[in-house]
Length: 249
Figure: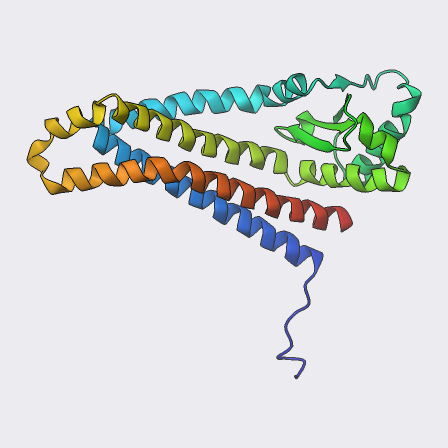
């Protein structure tokens, strides 16, 4: 095979670019599903686009609340304890603090808030809305089981999530998928309590077209949450690969 015909080698930069494209394509799928579900439900329920606008207003309010307070809620529900970086940390957390400082300097990131969760299972995650408002949490099990070099790999991976804005991206996908689930649940309840029958009677003059759209809305309400969850899992995998590539690079 000639040099001209030989495929270009895969590099970390190409891997990063490819995973970013895949992530945005998957988000586009979720948006299309959400739009199709909203449009079908608005017609089938008889509420028209006014109902969709109201749903969007509610979803926007929930999104804003999640954007500004989601990280604190995650830490509270996880039972995490924050390390006070204004004073010397406890001896058992000193290595974690040192490694986090090294990794954030290497990545050119602001200093994140550091948290510890009392759990024997080794785990770590990053959360927040942007690098300036980010947090990194680790479990006590992780700190006990890993040596310094291994801890650098884990913390570097989480710092990559912050630098790549995966924390914000994950929030976006979660809000979209959650909106799909809420919209589908509302329509199924609406149909169960007879709203769909009243809506069809109001538009009886529409004939078979109205019935077909209503059935399509019903099918979408059942299938859309599953599609959203599958896409969310796929996005999570691509962002994990992106974080790995960025951390190594």
